[in-house]
Image 1 (cartoon, rainbow, N blue to C red):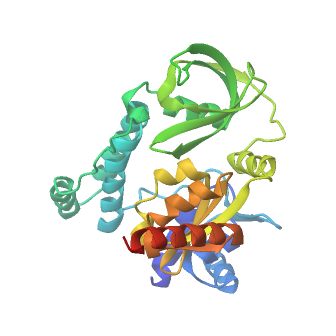
Image 2 (image 1 turned 30 degrees about the vertical axis):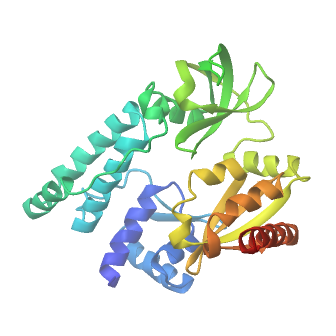
Length: 318
């Protein structure tokens, strides 16, 4: 990327948030902090009103906006592909909002880009998983997002896995997608504790507009950290899946205590909390040499015993 393109991209990034740290800009464009300072200075000398707060970052002074930005063909194609995922993995409220955004994007494309998207549209499909998705039920994801940001109490008519319905007033802290479904994490006033509500089981919704004060746990990250602390007696396991194998575990891993993942060289590192090493080991064996135990000597010992047992069983002389 040449410097002119980078300066334009930095300006767009500055307009995307209230405050942007210099480190964020450096990481995004893979440049040094010194280069960031020079680029920001260049924008200021060009007349862009950029302010700064010590220890926080840069911001655009209120009232300044760029004219409509033109999208590259690659950016427009990425948004169209994202739309295919939104269509299959969200509900009607989000799909309608995304469709509106995509129409606005298409309106600023040139004729060649529009033709490119029209052709590409018919050559990309996303297969909906067989498991039930929240898109098959109500249209509450957009309203839930608003409630999370505003920190407003919402009233849910919720059906549990025994098909029993109850009315809950909850304080939402975030939305989490796993096991092929969206989940609302919230403090339930009825149960006086944090609960995980599957969004496809919400049968009724009322955005009360009533604000609530943040509790000790007010973000998804804090919620997950609290789960780990509450499960210190469980076994912490870290495994490396070959990228080829990792694509097959995205749904099943949640049944075995999946916590988080990150990219590794040629692999995906996954962290788990499990109470049953034997069950976990039997699951891992199904992936053969495509998985490696990075943490947990106990798990290695269990795997070793299982492999020896299988070897004796299949190699015994009849």
